[in-house]
Amino acid sequence: MKRLPDFLGVILVVALILTTQIGASAQAIGTVTQLGVNNDVYIYQELRSEVIIMQLGNENSAKVEQEGSDHIAGVGQVGDENTIQIVQGGQKNLVLAIQTGDENDATISQIQLVNRGSLLNISNHDAFSYQSGSLNKLSLEQIEDENITSNYQIGDNNQVLVFQVQELAATGSNAVFVVQAGSANWAEVQQFGAHQLARSLQSGDGNMSSISQMGTDNTASVSQSGNSNHAIINQG
Image (spheres, rainbow, N blue to C red):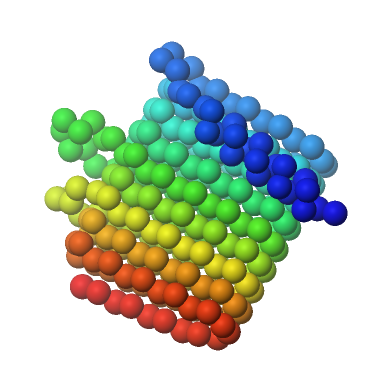
């Protein structure tokens, strides 16, 4: 009877994040709730950032590093042997990652590397990840400004890899939306320029979606229902 604890864990974490406000002080705030055995948390923060972590189960691992200012990270793990590692640089990044089930893995990195003078290294990355089932994997990296990613995996052995980078002359606003329901589905999205939109919707088993967009102002959408479907989109 895991469905009720899973649901309650998700609701609690989401509610905490939605009601979180970064104050005007220079303090960093970390809140950790652990119910179970051998759960592990590592947190490193600087300047007005906040982390909320809830672990319900056994042998879950969460590692969060936030270096800039005004970051918010929310982590919810319900089940056993789930792993999350989050790294945020720059400023004003938001991550909400939920794992329900066993042996799910998520790695999220949001980094602002360049200094554009008056912009003062403002990042504004948003990443949302939900994994329900077993042995699902997510690897996500957003490097420059205003990237948004939402990933939802329901089932077992699903994998998502998202990578967004923008040119120095670009002005942000990339978005990726991935939904996978079933087992052994795989989605890879790569976007390099600005103003790109990618969607990948897969339901069934053994489906593959690969999207690669390089320049600016590209839009790609994949929708697959059934088993063992393959889709590849490449735009310059």
